[in-house]
Image (cartoon, rainbow, N blue to C red):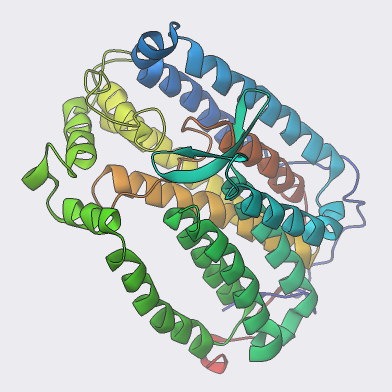
Length: 396
């Protein structure tokens, strides 16, 4: 089993003499996947939100306008990231991590953080809401990429390669739980586990971490009535269709209405005050009703293309930091996409996670597109820092 490391390369592969601080080449298939998802997102956000926007804000274009501004900023950020190159991002790992910690603390301060539906997750300025949790995901990827790339084979050590990463990630998870944002916290833990696994951390530490975390997660779920209600609704949403099962039941009905070819763009009916959060967390249900199974398969296919090309970028990165950064960003997109779509389809309990590039949310879209610029910069490499020597049998 090949693992990522900074101490060697696959036989026959040599890192090209390219200054990655300059404008690099990029993978066109990866770019088209990103642009395709963003375009589908803009169309779906308008379709899902127009009626609600006209009712609540006096204009059917309200949400589309804001999402369009975010898309413009994000595309500018993506172009800037491709021009800036990813190597210079490595030295910013700890400043970005510190800035994120401050933002996550500030969001909990009354008068600074904005509370919506019992959650304090946003900082409002200049008429827009900034969500620090989205920055935390990107900051964690950069931090883990830098740390794992520099530690190399020392990642097999509990005190050097495992425990420090768990402590740092755990601190940010605690800050997220304070908002509360259980879903983003679980994303960070999943990201940590996956990156440590690919870096060659010992399996006994990784398996032990899962068993240690399981009772903690159970306590977190049991300690909050709304989390228990979500779990109960997940088990049988139609048993309490007018109560806690309302969101999931209507999401399943929305998907069922679409059939194979869908009702047509803008012709969906469940979004008309039946499906809550249709333009955010449950946007894939709106896509399913209006574009049918084929529309959902298109979205799944684009995410599949994004993930496969992202993994390819990691395998062909010209240095270990780039390999881990590509891996982390790809995992971040993939994890959130799987969770979001699984929730809408009733395969997982409800979590407040957006669908990257597609769901309404300015912070998510701007940071997702900007991060995609770094992934595209890495995708232009043709080196190889993947080591075959650390086998699964020797990792216990």
